[in-house]
Image (cartoon, rainbow, N blue to C red; front, side, top):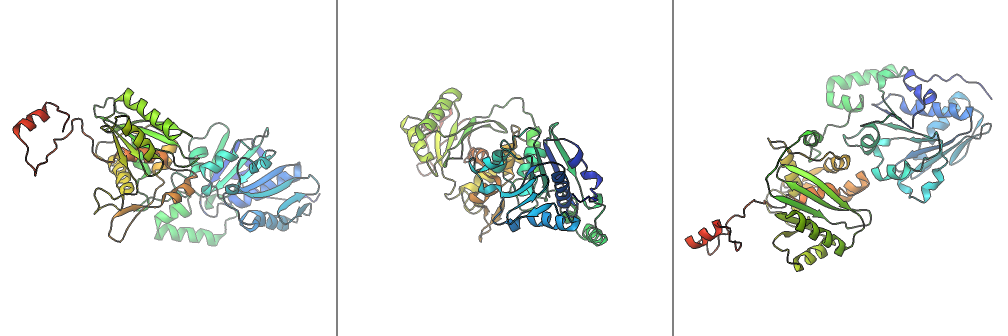
Length: 439
């Protein structure tokens, strides 16, 4: 076998010499991540037999994978022990094999072909959804197997960043690498980086230093206020209990109950694959046990059946029907109820008195995932839910349940109902103050 001299930058040496389940490299442009990963895998593949899977979220053709990069590096070093096929690469001596797949095309059955993988390289990992990761990770199960991850961060809540790198365990290596860590970075690239630094510091931080995009005017809810609410503790809350019920519409969605008292979102109760009657039974149980002032039920889909059952059970004083797509209460400010209720969360999180949220990575991703825009009348609207699902790999059910708790104001004592052209009697007023339920 031909001997070659491959110079791997020192910052990437753990790829070859250290054992970690997850090796997570991230950073900005020109850090050399892809070249170092490709060179390291080609070297390891010459030393012993390996099964290497090169993965990305979407791969419509082999041209969209790192296949070409590997072929170019093989040609650059003259590695004639590697044989290149149309859809795979093999080493003639060690029998190492490289395959290339898009994760979005895989399901629990198709992905079984990866069970014998020694090293899985996930390129452009900022695009990987939570769902893809949850299918992939348990599939790479061979003893000593590793998952190599390379990415340029896009957003604060990139799924793989949250799931793997934000709070790494002892089996996860997280390394940040930028252009100034790359000894092979061309001088022209360094000059471009410096010019960007001088002209647009925010772009420089994202493009060249690998920092997530500043949320600016794109996101409805900023990551900083969510984290602040995670860190806030409220000892006691006397506000009335409000429950938001987001009923699952499709197979992968979950039915979520959100419990909130004023400034404190206390917890979420999550259920999967419940029938309409089972959801109604669970809602009835919560109403009887916790005595909420209101339970707001999403009736945009199968939730309408849940609402009808609860009404028939005599709970109409507690339950209220809400449709995310219907006209907003403040029609001059919001395009629909969905935008109105989600902005209710936003205003609540940005209040002078910081509210508290249960620490939950899934909730964080839900809340920070939605982009805002405005219609021709200048009213706030949100991007389509299908777009959010594509990015998250699931529906933002917990955030929707929390949004439902802001459907309308809820008071400890109901306000007096003024009617009869605005006139009521002193007797009516007196009875109302005594708590007469007819108001």
